[in-house]
Amino acid sequence: MSKKKKDKQSQINYLDLIPEKAPSIRWHKDLKERVILEIENTGAFNKIAQKIFNKPRYTKVHLDGLGSFIWPLIDGKRTITELAALVKEEYGEKAEPLYPRIIKYFQIVESYHFVWFINMPQKK
Image (cartoon, rainbow, N blue to C red):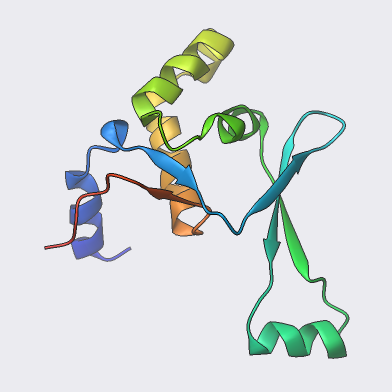
């Protein structure tokens, strides 16, 4: 990660942000109650790969236990702090270190465009 991008991320208080799921993401739970995100492979290259190499139309992303607990709670109204409190209530000490873990989770799902933040500060 470039130093400029890292500095920008360190200035953002992720705990105050309100995440919202990307509307294009389909999801469901498997038999073990783990969330599976279904990401559509779009674009010209993907269409060619689907036809020629029989690549799937959707890529499935399996979330871990913590991610599977958080994903259905993302409603576009709760802040990350509120979501963290729910995680703490459900998992207790198993969730520790809670805030670094939940912030990293949201940084990752945001980087893949699975979520976006309603109140993200504008770039200057």
